[in-house]
Image (cartoon, rainbow, N blue to C red; front, side, top):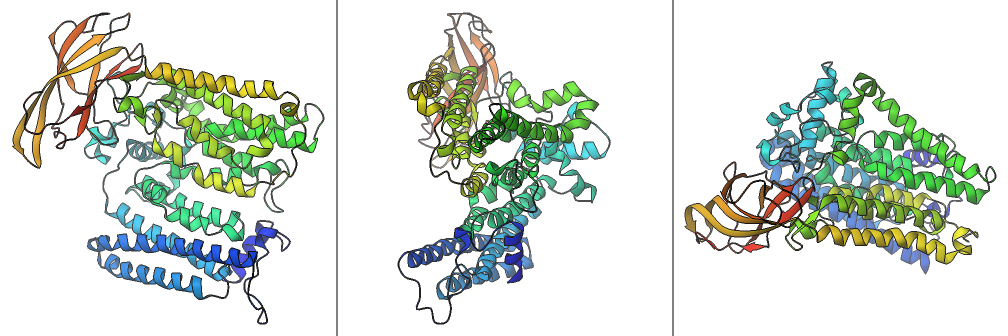
Length: 602
């Protein structure tokens, strides 16, 4: 193992003069031992690597429950536990915790524990847990069979989801998405694997492999003193579990990591062996997989321009040209990946690639919209939240341009703030930038003294240019959350089954009164939310009194019925009724209702 770290360090352009790597593999025999700050560094390393081995141990202990998957699983579980225990001992008994052998051993243990535990889960599964993962597999097969995925229906994904209607991405008009909704890289990168004969849970296998590659990249790209970050992130359940179980973001993460590593050196080569164009090309490939990395492009273009200005390159317009040249590399690589499908059917490709942005989807996520989803505001007008997110992006981008020297290590941690605002702010939008953000933060060159710039000469103007869009975003969020067009009242609940202390009830129908406070007729479509993190589909509605669509200022009573068997909420659980409308695209909710087990109506 001794030669591999040296090769890696050489390829990454590290030299013994690098202060972050200037810790020897082992002290000399006559060395009395570390003192002062060296002792603090050593103890920090030992504690950090102890956390790594604890994470490996926890993963190995969880894997014990997989013994029924096969004899091999029953054997691997205690072996993995033993390795984790031995690794913890070595961290505290070795002469120095930063020896290359111990670091690579920790990374290897993290890789194996994640690959074995998550791989066993994928091996035993026969259905995906997200429609996006199923769509990617169907699209890959269509492409290999000579069909354009963007002009084909994804209905075949039904056999890969069980039950399918619990995993669809629903639209506010009552339909659900049955088309490819990502750029072409999402399935093109899977094509070679499927072409080689793998047809079982292809998306999950490819995503797991991408996450393992990401772990190796992080380990190689951060300073030696921080290498423990790689296996710790690798084993973290928020990433490993999600990326191997239907989460499709893992495929763009390694490309984003490469894109942001030493991004502030562009257009100079980051190392002696890595051409400068690799960064923007990797970003373009990441953008060709999902839309999430698109939000990184303006920050990197502005950041590169700011770095060129600091270096005094090209005169007055030199920084602008440098930033635009970087953007051209990004756009060019994105177009190259998608070009066959743009030529094949430009309209279908454009609709598919922009589908999440142009087709109104139901509200979902853990951001600001959760106040509406959980009945605290009575609903939300979703386009206003989208506009607020746009203003938040402008505010953060202007702030980055003005104070780039201070924000350059942290800008990628700011991007999730933008994605916290819109009506769909899923958990993966808020977490999946973290691996790349860590690499970006530790790999940029710190600026000792901020050179004078526009923000220094005009502090009030610069603050206003950031504060105005930020304030506008906040105002729009308030307006969005207080403008729901319908007032919904739950009148009666009918249940079936046997009322027991532990449950056993199912919902027959819910009667609601819907009052239209807007100035136009609205046709509400209903859901019932009783816990859980994903919409369970629209319910059928029958008019009891009044008109449908509901006239302005009028009230209509509906009886809404689940389209399939739906268990009643648990005893004491809170639940609510949701209604979606178009024109405006809005969510209106009842107040939160507490379930009283065994009561026929309330």
